[in-house]
Length: 200
Image 1 (cartoon, rainbow, N blue to C red):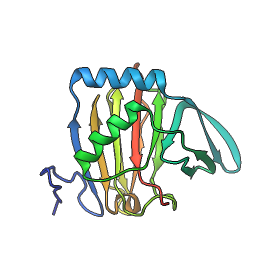
Image 2 (cartoon, helix red, strand yellow):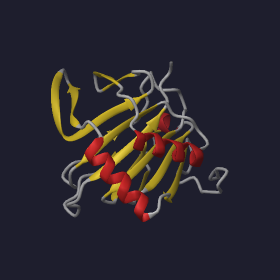
Image 3 (cartoon, rainbow, N blue to C red):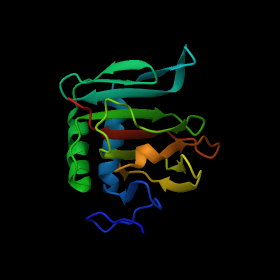
């Protein structure tokens, strides 16, 4: 039976976790201001991952922000958080109000166009609070986003719109993978923010 959060949003997963799509939570003007600020003020750099012992530089760019120089390790690379910008603080406050959760860090990804995506993975690193809320915000191009159950292989697809919020909660990261597929139909950039909670 699908779960519901306190905003009466349906759980888009059939079970083994909870994902709530809030849709567009900002006005058009707010969304444009946040997008421009993130594009210009964030310290973007090409992401690095280690795959089968080899260091790979990705086309997409990333940034890591958070409280008190928090460190975060994923794909074999440790990252030290930069202090939240004013824009990130504003977005974080609105996100925390919507999701009824608190976050101490944010991983940002900049996809220049549809040729850049993200393969199947779960945000299940040991440094993250287990079963904590992960809030994903999208600015710029709308992109398709997929979930796949690790056991049943069931797939779920949705479109993440400009200015939208997606909250992944409970055991979602334990039982589900997610993916941002590449597409030739998108020629505009997309900025993705994922607010999360690192163990202190």
